[in-house]
Length: 445
Image (cartoon, rainbow, N blue to C red; front, side, top):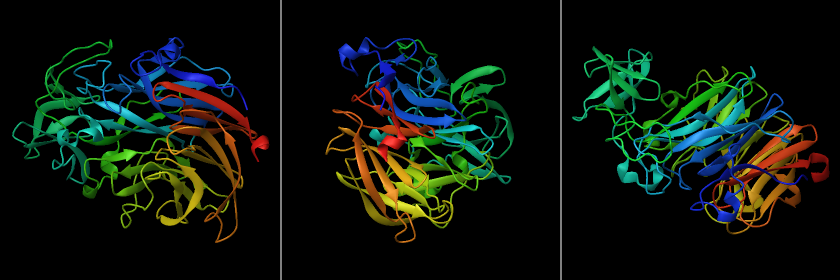
């Protein structure tokens, strides 16, 4: 086990113990941080994070990364790869006049591309103020066989955004409106504001670009966006909305990413874990390196709970660990058809509070990082052996439990670095302090 290495550190004593903010610097810093995701991209570790304006799950939140090409010994300086449109940007939980990215999840495509999916919310307070959200406006429509984003004028008349950014009116006729980038609306050459914002520009205390709301606006809700990198995280595509490929009306205003990592199966299928609030989990998958995404039509939700992670066993069964509703055993779902359908099975003996956890598979073993107390505290690395009972994987024999830390422990993400080394990135403070530690696999089994 290595000594913990600090990867991301907040600079504000409003969201992190003041004595720890002194460790925040250009390489690792920002006002606040949450939600770890880390993956091995062809030998390069990519650590992704929410870089936020406060310790809350709303406000001005960017997606940022750091990279390591030496197994986690040294890391590149922090780099923002996705920034939301905002009317205001203040380091305060009271500020939510901004869109925001949140909850990154990464996978490696069969062609070697790094695929990241992340929630994007239009200006609102996310799940924490539902009365701000649009519960009835359709975000997409089928026009001439294509799924187009829908925006609305002040009379709630719909307009439709073509793939090239041009806009059709409610009669499907061409207009001189055009949407560029992440929601920036133009009429001819005149800039009219951002479709994801509502109102005038306000206070900017973050030193970021701010703008104002457009006269045509997108529904206030959660969207799923994707970014790709073909050079192990050095450069990234612009965020692309993929929600319309798999959204169902029954999902409501929230179908979100379960943060951590996705999975590329033996067949080359990329599976990303999502969930719909109060309904269950959703697996979306791509068989073409992330170009298109779908989910099964006859099983819109599975019986797992909230944020979840998944692995593939040697017999190709997929195993998913969910999030408890309260302290107790961990819910489990499995798929025997490459993630198309899932069934709930007996809970496994990983006792944890209501919190995200991470799992990875190494040969015949499952490794799970999780909080181990009734509250989010005392991180544990549990190692289980897959058994052949009940056609494999319905049961896991837990053989060791190694402490990761003492004290606060919340979200985490595991990564295999090489044949005998794994790493874990984890939240070791209630906000804004994420550490990375490595273990020898041979010493865990």
